[in-house]
Length: 96
Image (cartoon, rainbow, N blue to C red):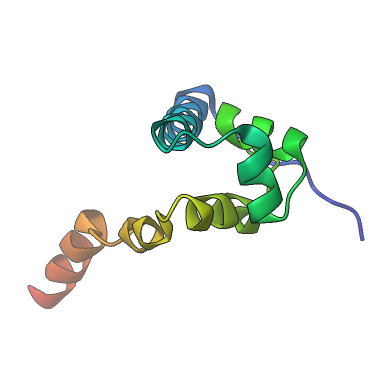
């Protein structure tokens, strides 16, 4: 199966980079080394490096395992939780 490379617009690449930086800061606040987190997450050290850079080629599962190691797994539930645009669309439909 061919893996299709993801194209991310530059303005959204910045969001991924910020997320990677947040993950790196969370690791450092916990005084965990990159090797420790990578081993506990079951990923290669190089993959953790890519995650901390906000690389879009890394699987969501790898990101999740790192968040789990940092005890931030519940933050995943915040993704798309506040669907303001979707609610506006739904409200417009209800007003018809």
